[in-house]
Length: 602
Image 1 (cartoon, rainbow, N blue to C red):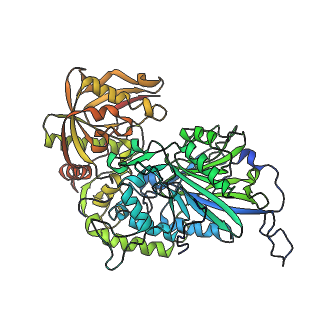
Image 2 (image 1 turned 120 degrees about the vertical axis):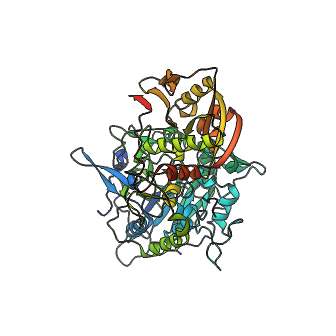
Image 3 (image 1 turned 90 degrees about the vertical axis):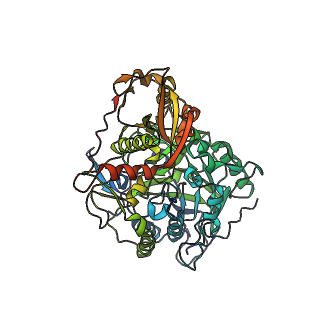
């Protein structure tokens, strides 16, 4: 396979209704001695021959999820550690600001490449999701993104739709959104090295891409997490096979080396969990990578030393760490949180004599996409254009709240609200419905009291509801025994969810204790599980409402895929809308739920 870049043009969900940036280098052992000459020429003024060492600026971000406008509430803030040990929050995000920050960062850097770690689209707010994420691709083109890996959410609408986002063309069902204009597709390559067509056994998109500038060559290999089928609807990954991340990267690093490309960056849509939520936390203190856990640690330790840096994502965490490669040499591993709130600036010093990165010189830091810089006017125009098209649907009021309904916590207020809405809707479908369960990953944002536009404080618009629940799942009813129900709760903290529990959000009446001081299934105190004050009867049958993703066994809840008496209802957002309209008004708004159904012992 040729290493010649694809000739991409450089610089240049649908519903059923249709100061300066702050940063801190966390390079640990990577700041070792380095030859003094790292400029472009290494010669006196007037000489044009490049010097041996050339600094390459790698700007990166991940998990944008179509957040073109500044995210609301806690989703639009980052935490910053202060010198005195305290912390503060900073409002962050929005592509109008991200564009400005990236453009300012590139100034004076002839050797600059911008890459992303996947989930650029999917689970997007209405402004993008309503139009199958075409607005986000347009924004990324304007951001001069060079390359990205696929993430799991790139498969929300299936491989064919992902191919359309790459190559262009109007949507096969909804057509063209702007009269007379065909969607052009992405100017940058999506990389999917470990996503194979089951029939051809070949990657569905390019496995790698090579950036070239004046003799400098850096290869990029893109993969998504192997467990993508476990976190995406079955229809989205139909006909696809997802291979091991490490094996795939090692294979293509070797292939790139054979083609003379010895400097390699892996774009991996899988990540870690740092010990602190602060973006500038030093996860290399006291030792390299000591402050980070999660899947990326083992992945990083096993990827071939031929790879010089890892740009990661998926966990929505922020870190700039070093983790030793298999040879024991430190290697930078970064993630820029999510929703465009941060970007990472990494310096890779390229050795023209060897064609490789001098890894002792790699330095990396995360920077806040503050909202104190001027907005990029081209992004403002893009947002205005798509908001105008979305307004007739998006501005419709669907409910009223008396305060912020947060999505933060093991049990969150918005989680309770959604579960209650699905229980109420389930009872409409079948009065025998007993309870509802909601996956936390399906809740993408809080509901905020402050007005976003002209709707007024406390008004929930359809657009805001869409941002919270953008997946267009259906509400499904199934029968389970009490023993199965308790097993579902245990699956929150066992199996694939053992290392990072996925705590289901539960409807009113269901209560239990989650003891995080224990291990494995024992963390769910079985005899504490009660429904309306009565202990769960292992032999009794319970009618349970979930969304279609959970009903298919998603997120590791295999027992939820074994229910009986299936009944498929309407869209989950429609259920939330119906609940809000029935239970709130301008004079009697809904109060944030107390989030007191799960007793958490820490």
